[in-house]
Amino acid sequence: MDIQNLLDDIVGAVQPHVGQGNVADYIPQLGAVDAQQFGISVATRDGEVYSAGDAHVDFSIQSISKVFALALVLAFDGDSIWKRVFREPSGNPFNSLVQLESEDGIPRNPFINAGAIVVTDRLLSLTGNAAQAVRDLMRQETTKDTIDTDHDVAGSELANSHRNASLAHFLASCGNLENPVEDVLDSYAKQCALAMTCEDLALATRFLAANGLGADGNLVLSPAQTKRINAVMLTCGTYDAAGEFAYRVGLPGKSGVGGGIAAVVPNKCSISVWSPGLGKSGNSVAGVAALDEFTTRTGWSVF
Image (tube, rainbow, N blue to C red; front, top):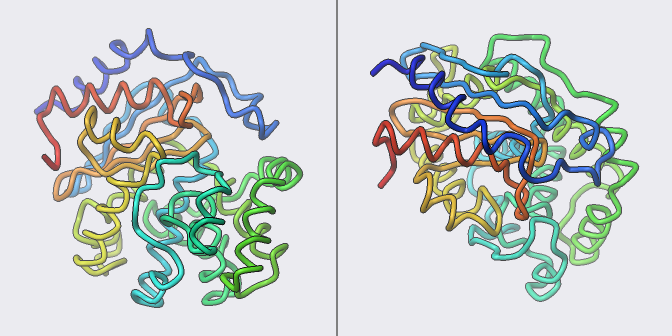
């Protein structure tokens, strides 16, 4: 298969979708991003990388970082995190308070904001610097030591984090945070504000397509842990649109409100797409369309 030609074709095919939706303007720094951009990259298990469109433009990965925080917590601490967060789809918006209250402070899954705050809290306890731990994993897997937090985005996010603060304080009131709320929120914002390109993100995610094998030849996760992260990505990675994403794309995927989506074809490749316009569930409109095109044309799917 000529993957480069395929990606070039996809860039043209999704142009009608580029700019559709709305940028995440509730974080002012993200609201200023030009929506008329689209990039796609594929990193194969064998180490080849293919890119097209705006694949070398940095963007804020936002909630995609939750996958890597969870991977680190599982690697360092085994399955103990599952006593503090469930693994079920939420069916509610990613920043909803309602379900958290009705379920006594145990978030429905690690990819909604409440669950990710719990995971970041645990990573902070394990490492002393959760955001740096996620950044260092990204640098390790991409072999790119310039990847870092965009502090303007992190500051903008913290200044407008009233909903996340509410979630964190409720978690703390239920005894489900180990660290001070302010420290957890600071780590969470810096982790989400990591700036990367599509190519970076595809490379960083490749261990999830390789049974946990990292860029240096060592395991980031065990094969069993890798399978489980991919499973939670499939069922929970695109919030209350996870069923639609599974139907259209058929791959484990994790989206972020910066417009990125990272997806995994187990044992074949990782894929990263980016376009800032979001649908009502917070997923990139053009990004989902591109992944739909990719899996339809290749026939690559977990189904």
